Image 1 (cartoon, rainbow, N blue to C red):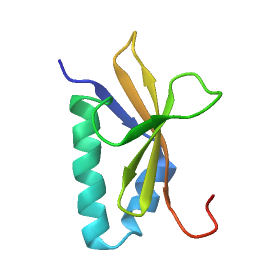
Image 2: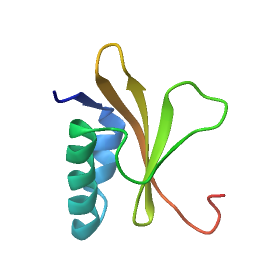
Image 3: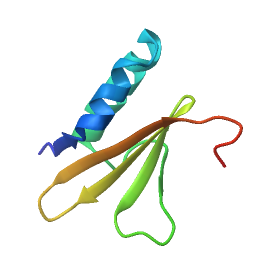
Length: 85
């Protein structure tokens, strides 16, 4: 059974500003999250309930998983730079 994917409007607008190749990679990753949000290079964010991040090249997708409703809510996509961490 597929999960329902909700993407914040701010995130949708940000994706449009990314280079085409990166947009394609992120799109493919979002489709994979729709199938199984626990698959791939994901890490649970420390000190948070059901908040995760997934790496896609130089980008980080942050999302929340609601198991009861089978919803994945993408709330942030950022490019990782040398000053990110």
